[in-house]
Image 1 (cartoon, rainbow, N blue to C red):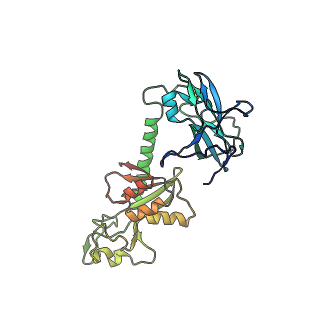
Image 2: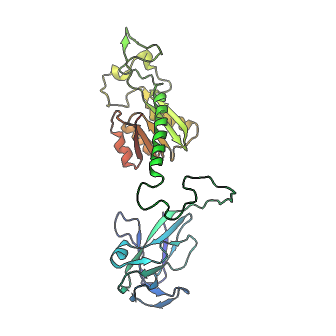
Image 3: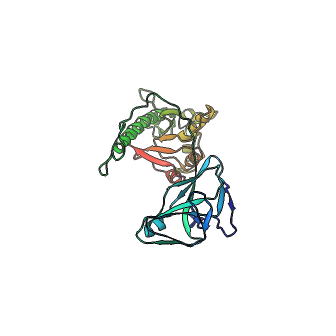
Length: 335
């Protein structure tokens, strides 16, 4: 993003970030303005007595692109050390505003405070905005809290919603994890499965005996399953149940050379199926009954998946670290 800043006085300072990790841009005091006309009424410094407020001009204009806004927030150092705050905290600079950015400071302390020229007096925070369509309704959806207002949740205790919310999430995670396990049951990966006379043994329900590689993936958005997948051969490959496991044939140790396999992992299949139906994974939750491998984890980081829920006590891999580094939420659930 590029935001244009114009000095309206030659000696004005352009806002800066005070550190590499700062999200706010510190703004500098330039002149004292009249609160009503916004005209310059005196140069700095100025002494602000307890209980008084003063409008400080920054000497700059900002062209904020739509749909973003700029909030003018107090600096923590001024507030903590001198009880200097913003009277209209936070102030807002709209995208269509082209006047001088001003900061309305108020002295809440017990001693006079001196504001000097080029003092860093506030910080600017830029963020996207949403302008929803407001529709008049005769009746609003009910909530547990209802009309209760200021202070009704109390100062101590657990409040109204945290435990109930967490329990609701836990039940939902359990439900979709059970679906994931059912999807995983469709896998026909034969690695480790029992063979007799070259043929894989099956139980009364047709399942492979001693089968261990059953992995499933379910993608959920807005409490709806939008895609699913299980580890299975790629389209056009020989069926492992007919020709045997390629990895066992090549004596490849578990967890290594994962690209040498006829199977696509459950995550690949789920995201592939989602793409084939024109769906999007942005903001969705992915359920897995195993941790993703490093390759799958990298694919997930670029898919828009917001949260990954995994079965507690599952087969560990190095993929989870990749998800964490990408800022993806991770939860574990028992079933």
